[in-house]
Length: 273
Ligand code: ATR
Image 1 (cartoon, helix red, strand yellow):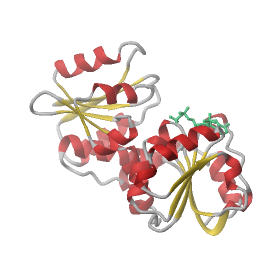
Image 2: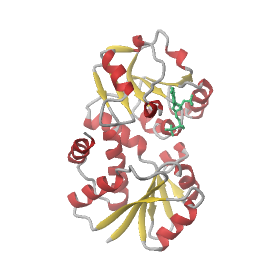
Image 3: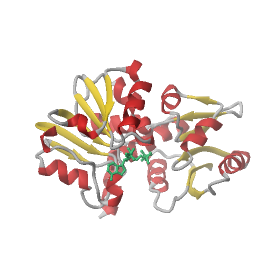
Image 4: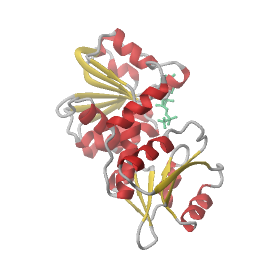
């Protein structure tokens, strides 16, 4: 039985063990997957011990994604762009490969599961933290017409836009950037919903065809989802599908088999309520 785990702190509420157990059963893979709470100053040692003890692959969650990036011997392009790694994979020569599957997870959920179009669309991303950094490259790869990043702290959005400028038509700024503008797709990547809040947005942001995606999820619609519904978005979704899709991409990286995600998303959804 091959050993896998997710490292984070806190880790109690992680759904990764349930997701990977479902994938393993579905794909007939002999593997175990545990959630491990790692001390804040003990990440490197914990990773070394895990692989020395026969571990094959790790998921990395908050607050260790940058440390995992630094620790990887080799990195995928998208991980290099994000400056963060959520998947570590032991290679045959004993070295560690680091990938970041968050962005592809988001794109797959929107395009393959929800049937939303990204190409030629005007995309707005709310927030400018690590969650945004992780998804910009895969989003821009879909060739949207434009991508705007708006954040409470304008400078952080401007800096991100400058950093990714060579990948597409990007602009960054404060929430005041949004006055009088409309977007086809709005992605909330702020953590405001965790406090039951959301960024101050003009209601005129949406057209009757706009889609709204919250990277957070919960048993009930998030504040951003309620705002989107109130302003009659065409379609609204939360981030549960992204969670399962990023896990599926990690699973594929490790096992070279691609699990069906639909049944696992449905299974998780039924346990949230
Ligand atoms: P993550 O890794 O989840 O992106 P983060 O780096 O702490 O976490 O970023 C949190 C994001 O949510 C930031 O863009 C933050 O805005 P600031 O850069 O201005 O701090 C945003 N955010 C958090 N609470 C918010 C709120 N109540 N209203 C608007 N934006 C909020």
